[in-house]
Image (cartoon, rainbow, N blue to C red; front, side):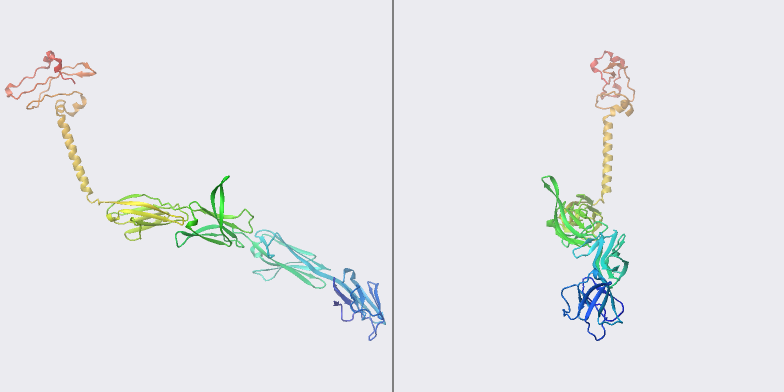
Length: 520
């Protein structure tokens, strides 16, 4: 209950809150005189009167208007129709003073509402918008007879900024291309212009934005080569995204091959790590990391993936080297994923090769080399290029053959050439000796090439060289396409030079038997 005033005045304005109770005082009674009759008028119209000889409760529970024993007017649950000018008159009264009061009805501010669009509410009532969008802010409140409205903002870098001020039942403004700097608490304050009563409401607004890039899948080798750590990172967004590590592989179904998946781990974080061992991995397995963010529509999630591959080292399986030289064994491994760890081993017991002046190890991209310096016969044997990743171990087997030193190679070549020359001389000499008759009778090798004649010599006990020209017979007619020449050769018996036979003239051969002819 509210008493309008405590002192006298010719005219007073009092405020009454809608729905509440109020007492309007009356100062028209003479001092130290008990009134006998009181009446009140509203806006010049008779409203209520009271004969003080009748006793009534001090605070009546029923009725809208009641005149109390001290002439005050009690109004129960004020409504808008009670607004106006009230005049009090009583008997006996003080002619010098007459009470006049103006009752102003006030209400509010009530029903203060903040509306931010487009915004999405969270479970705790906080709102969020997407970076880059245009956001509208509206505040409304109910006050009577009037009110003032104001928007305020409190962010991380600001204490309390005034964004907009106005009067009326609502007040709005907007922010275009909203950025994370606009994230904070927004408050709307409404104040009644008569009662000065103020009310307000506030809400927290967050600005969400997704990472600009796709998630990034990485791997780290564990202490044990059969273990691996896969990490999926997706930085640059607010709030942190939800990451899902899963397995994708092909299975046969009733409609052919279908993609099947198994969720390994999920968490709301910028970086999700999962540890796996060899028993859970196989060649051709696809691992996929999906990233979901509240600003991305369902079905448009970003992801990264990779397909696991077992190692496959390649190189020459057989290598030959000469004793005392250097040799380089080469191994290439570029197939594995995650990349395999490659090392060299030697002998059937597969002893690890350690870099030293004897063994020089080097690596250039996917190519691994082992250089053996000053090879000896003891270096001959098996060498292994061993590649291992979390899926499996594979080895390339190389056999090194060491040959004897080449310090006598010059002598060997010289001996070979000497043998070749001597052999060639023997062959040529034998050939000349075998064809000596043709060479002598046919004027050398030239005649042998020009003629196709074949001479048959009759051996004697002792041979002599003919220095005279051998007479030739005229050619006979062609036989089988070849000319026929008749030659008669006498055998020289071993007698004295005086008894030497005289060679007959070729023309005397006409009477000889044809069987004695030699045909060429």
